[in-house]
Length: 175
Image 1 (cartoon, one colour):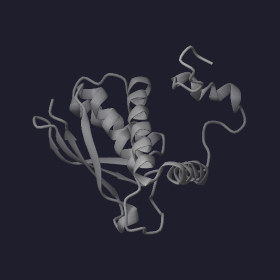
Image 2: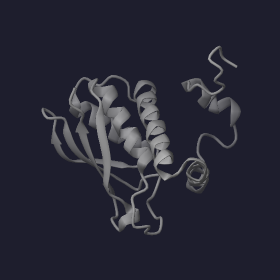
Image 3: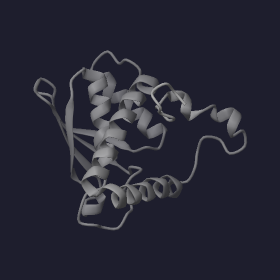
């Protein structure tokens, strides 16, 4: 245990050496396993703390993941175009989703992004509400890491609300 009493402070090292640990199965698993972990975790968090707190925790986890993903996978692109190109390629190669930028106003820090075939909800039944709160945080973490500014990200369309892509309004938070 660390001196702060935390056992699981995130470090990229927690992802492990996949080549050594999974020499036969490799780094890929079925989407059902990812969703099983995510939605059972959400269920338990919601039972223990309520929906709003569970959503807050998932957003914060996504934010941390986005920052760590940027630092360890995306790198340091020179400009917005390179950032988007690199991110699109990485998300596709890792089967995370298909990213598109529908609107971009970099001067005002305002974007509309879509992620199709995403991990969290593509193919789920309609629920009447969006479920991609972790993705909101993930996108916010990526954008903050690239720009140095904080962002508010809200899902405005979701597979679970009858749309066939997830759409996110991404807005820089004024300082």
